[in-house]
Length: 160
Image 1 (spheres, helix red, strand yellow):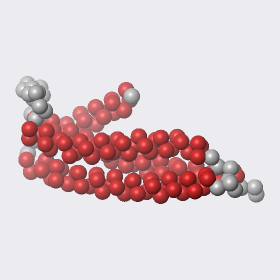
Image 2: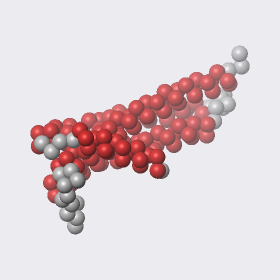
Image 3: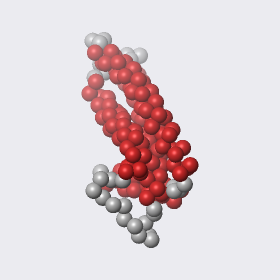
Image 4: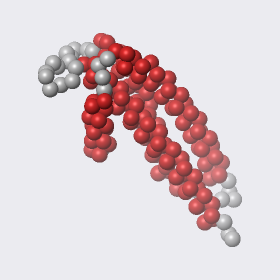
């Protein structure tokens, strides 16, 4: 748990360097990010449903020695990735609201070493985008790894 949190903190600090407090810059991000992440999440969900149906079909036939339990590592990893992508989508929807209203019962601290409020929220939005891209790459890696693993199992169970 420490490693993913530290990676997200490093990504946030990297995004903080590139964030801006200009309204036109963050309006572009706020307008396009939720729609794009939602479409990607829908596509990944559709792809996963196809993969799961193929896995269930192949492992439920009596003619194969392949068990569904051999794929649980991949399925668990995909579940974690999809939940994290969903969290990034929710963050991309909530952050524009929090930029305007602020966090209830909290005032944004003003200090010369801290970035201003708009820069901070822009960095959070950029962090959600970068983490989403990393998750999408990971989902594709798991999907192709699942395919490679499945082909190995098919080769091992082949009597030739």
